[in-house]
Length: 132
Image (cartoon, rainbow, N blue to C red):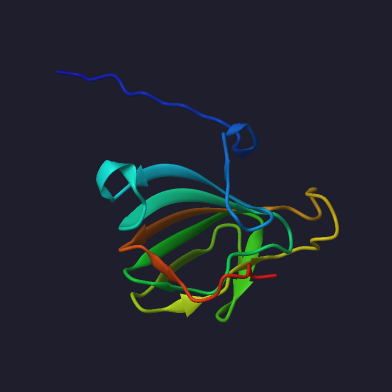
């Protein structure tokens, strides 16, 4: 028996991004590990951070795996460019900030950072302010 596949291809600019409470940081939910679609227990998402913008300090309650699809970001481990794969262990903390100049618009020379991320077990915010 052959089951035909289904393939959908969209540019990241065409996705219905959801704004976060942090300026310049949006996300798109791909899958949820929580009941009723909640993300508290973990999720697989696309994250888009405008140049120079970031996510506040947080701790991973489970393993987080990240693949940088476009642009790049920095944290305490260094700079991570498109194509980089990172695996953060449970209990790890970081403040990811997109590379680039937040005073300038997205452009080929100043791209947004787009991540594919799987966070198991959820995250705990350590500060309310966005990483900038």
